[in-house]
Image 1 (cartoon, rainbow, N blue to C red):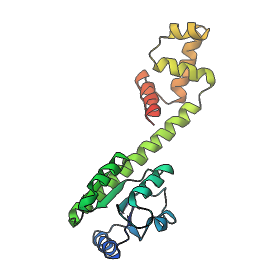
Image 2: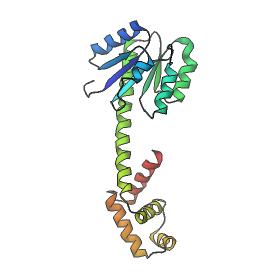
Image 3: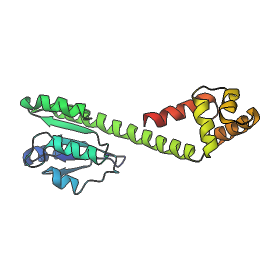
Length: 203
């Protein structure tokens, strides 16, 4: 892809791999194809902007088992499963485990390209969110223990006076800590602080 993304294709059926590869070539999409899960695990870059087109039934490690292995490794790679008619219950289970979609064989070229486009967009959005979470965590980690206590209480909706009583400090000291919290977290308002806390909680 023009932005450096890559589509990983894992399927034990060589004609299927070749067909998908030719399709991706025609639209200028970078791809890497593998005949089995183990070959993929030994070669893929988990930091790449990517998605995975994965056959659900393969000898050795199945598509579902590969999905589970990636989940265990903490690899958040959007997966599009290729399924036969009898594999629909398995595909539904795969989506419960986090797969973004599945397409049934035989599939139309445009259908696969549409799913890939959606998966790559999802990966890009997830990477942006992860970067934002990392930045937010860095900002909050810069707070002193006392500032962290004030941050937690302020974002829970407590007034300065209540915080002062609970922490055994003056209201003026709370105001100073609160000002430092705003500065260190690059927040302009209480709403910014609350959004920051919610982002970290959801992560």
